Amino acid sequence: MKILKLPKANFQKFLLSLKNYGEVHIPKKKSEESYVFAPMEDPSEVALEYLRTIIPPKKYFFKPKESIFHYGDGNHFNEHIEDIDKKIVLFGLHPCDIHGLKILDIVFGTGYIDKYYFARRRNVLIIGLSCMPDERCFCRSMGTDATEDGFDLFLSELKNSYLVTVGSSQGDDITNDLKDLLGEITKKDTNEYLKIRNERKKRFKLQLDISDLPYILELQRESEVWDDLGKKCLCCGSCSMVCPTCSCFNVYDNLSLDTKKGERIRQWDSCLFKDYAVVAGGHNFRANRADRVRNRYYHKQHGFVTQFGKPSCTGCGRCIQYCPTQIHVVEVFNKIRGEE
Ligand code: SF4
Ligand code: SF4
Image 1 (cartoon, rainbow, N blue to C red):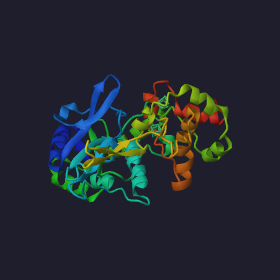
Image 2: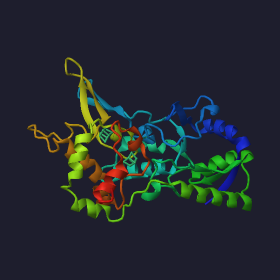
Image 3: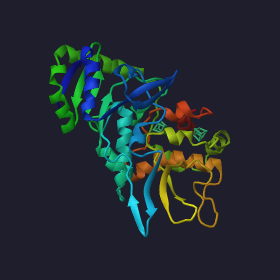
Image 4: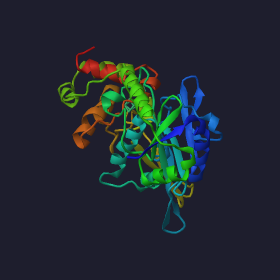
């Protein structure tokens, strides 16, 4: 593992230099407590203090809505992969969001390989950034508060510099190209890193005990907690849309009026929506809100664990921040554990 040092005095030059590798996207402030990943027009726009964007980085790889092919013109269809040739440098991902992408890699790469997702995944360089948790972060409980892979470069903030960890050959090329901006790390830097790391560890206030959670969920399938939750949840789907690992989508056709031409659309969907589980004949397997909420929680902390050996939640806190009825995922699991 190669680790270098970027003095803060060189940070803006570093950010500008990233334009040589693609269109640079950074976290930007949108309103008091809201941030978005968006193209960088000026390096001064970067919101280094951000903790979570509204929509996670999945939007770059798994688009909210995209046309996947057109048809017509005789019997032919033309495949279409949006942004297939677009190089992007995505700057500022925190460890939980890097883990979110690693989970999506499993989802879109197991069994059927989703070429739309991976075509864009190959074209995006990931530059990670360290963070200090707030009261909604529980990534430490989920084991996603740090990462040793899944990035090209990772910047860990010190007082006057960043430690730059190289995570790929492309990241190595960048550090070679930008060697004039970088330096060697010293013992003092290491000590400073350890001090900040220990301080960060103390700042995690929210915790979710996931030991034997799938087992407890198995025992609690009929718990009244799900009925109570069903009364509170609007099934608006916001938690799915902002979740870095939710990956459900719908597929439908837009046809021309004469039905001879059209396009096939793929669009984000949510298992919280009422018609999500409707099948041919009109039967709805999850007609009740309580069933739909329970399904989402079981998928994250039971089904995914059973299938892939880990939960599909990164503890990013987005669903806590953006739920209009203040449903709190950790409180729900604490109730299920009888630890209210
Ligand atoms: S954001 Fe809240 S109200 Fe909306 S579906 Fe999710 S849990 Fe229910
Ligand atoms: S379930 Fe909530 S906390 Fe977990 S990854 Fe999704 S949005 Fe983040």
